[in-house]
Amino acid sequence: MKILVTGGAGFIGSHFAECSLGAGHSVEVVDDFNDFYDPAIKRANVAGFAKDAPVYETDIRDGDAVRRIVEGGKFDCIVHLAARAGVRPSIRDPKLYLDTNITGTFHLLEAARQCGVPRFINASSSSVYGILKTLPFREDLALTQTISPYAATKLAAEQLCSNYSHLHGIRTVSLRFFTVYGPRQRPDLAIHSFTRAIFEGRPIAQFGDGSTRRDYTYVDDILGGITASLGYEGPLCDVFNLGENQTTTLSDLIAMIEKALGKKADIERKPEQPGDVPVTFADITKARALLGYDPRTKITEGIPKFVEWFLRTQR
Ligand SMILES: NC(=O)c1ccc[n+]([C@@H]2O[C@H](COP(=O)([O-])OP(=O)(O)OC[C@H]3O[C@@H](n4cnc5c(N)ncnc54)[C@H](O)[C@@H]3O)[C@@H](O)[C@H]2O)c1
Image (tube, rainbow, N blue to C red; front, side, top):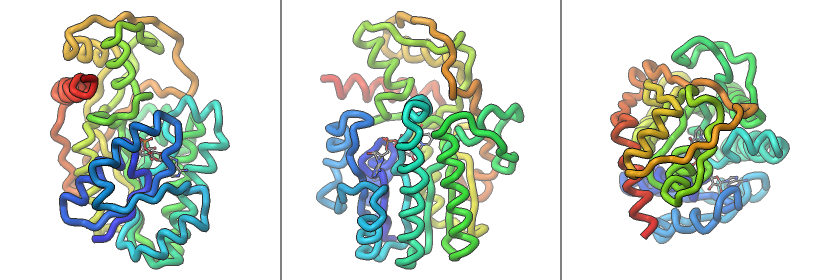
């Protein structure tokens, strides 16, 4: 298969590009290497595969540039992972999130339509569930409220995908990722930022009383879900949760990182943040049944693996 991976220099995208090349697919990558976090990390992420996959340094907000890449590629599938991620920064700069995550997605779908790309995999997020009380979250829950600009953009992108399936026959699969972690995890995310702070002897900011819960997903499991979507032949437009179907409190997460590092955290308690949700919890029955999704890495194994990677890359 010939695959265009957007956001292929990022955390999940670089893993997916590598794993697809390893599986024998032909891969091209689009990424603008922006400074949401240190672009040198993104350059290092692509260094291992750039000789095997063209990397276009292109901003998906530029519709003409996106169309030129898609036109030239004759792709069988676009795996769309490029986005401005993160809830809190989206509250500070909502326009950037709308322009990238909604208009950027529109540009890719429009290019797919114009150039006859039959399949589009869209990275969505557990944040679309907002503060729903029905747990665990199932894909068929009615989503009537999002609580951050980031979540609104992810839901809007899903809706654009459903338009393009209905109107133009493009197969779209939106995958709702539940907090993904593992080697190369974004430095802004809790597991990575806590690990670094504890390692360097700096305090960590704990928002709330530590009882908030997340369904944390190891990156290899996410890759299994994305890869399965490449061959999905169910309804033309579909949506799947990709999580682990288990939750961990913030306090337990910090304790696991402390144990893996062999070092106590200096915890600074701060109020809960606007836009943060109290719990995420994935029902993965549908992904198991229809995609053969089979997450295997429990958080108790995944945190030591992450910390082991973190320590190795500090040397
Ligand atoms: N990591 C998670 O826990 C998580 C959870 C839910 C959803 N997601 C989604 O998964 C996808 C990948 O997330 P990630 O954690 O790997 O993030 P990441 O920031 O590491 O990767 C995203 C990549 O997209 C690129 N990008 C951003 N704006 C762009 C633009 N305008 N043009 C071209 N490239 C652009 C960035 O440079 C980056 O390399 C995103 O769509 C994110 O919203 C991630």
